[in-house]
Length: 275
Ligand SMILES: Cc1cc2nc3c(=O)[nH]c(=O)nc-3n(C[C@H](O)[C@H](O)[C@H](O)COP(=O)(O)O)c2cc1C
Image 1 (cartoon, rainbow, N blue to C red):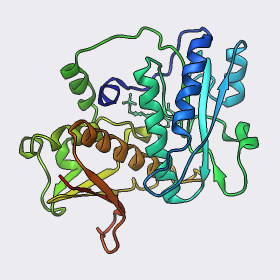
Image 2 (image 1 turned 120 degrees about the horizontal axis):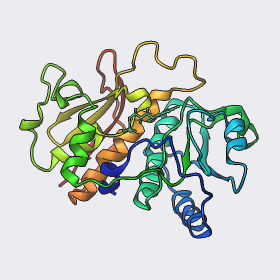
Image 3 (image 1 turned 120 degrees about the vertical axis):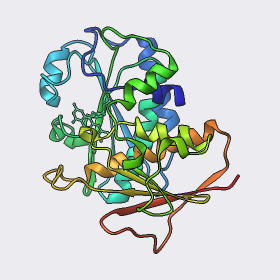
């Protein structure tokens, strides 16, 4: 999956052709595999798959992506409870879907703002929300790059480690040359992850074998939205960090601690690295 983290980027222009049956089945299998999974806070997503065999532009108008997203033949989205930590779980679980789709060669893009939520109203019940959807299709003009180039290309549009990651406390920013060998890729996978408007609001404090995740909210950002958009970004960061740990064959647990606070940041959870 870490290859998919390096490969993934937002795709907004697709080849104008419907998905073939093999791909429809593949996407169905991915959804079936993901459906029983729970996030670190215990929430699950109810997925829906919206395949448009003809009338691609007409459907795009209805979903409200017309103009932003070109020629997408299908969409997948999900429903979850509208509470802060459920939205974190949505970010964590839906990013797994994005990575699995990327691995299969599909183009995707997280859409939290630029779609018409009410066109999916029939999928939601009281106090539920569709925080984000993604188009699925074949990227127009796909290019392939080597691993090192893939990281560098993304890191150019991201904050440096020292603005997001810290050692023991916020007075000690972490510079990438001082990070130990196995931890570095884990942090790089967080760094190159997608976030709403590329705000990168994730903050991490490393304290021995504990990795504390926080959200530093961007002032006034997405305040008109009916849910906490940046909670999704934190779920994505946790997903990427975990994929790094899996790649490094580390044992770890998620812990939700009491009394871990930082002024102005929202504490999300801690990953305890066991060995
Ligand atoms: C939670 C979330 C919501 C997003 N919402 C939108 C959106 O509504 N419209 C859009 O065009 N891109 C959206 N994006 C895509 C981001 O703009 C994009 O991930 C970011 O700029 C980084 O670029 P990259 O994905 O190519 O690495 C969203 C991303 C995330 C994680």
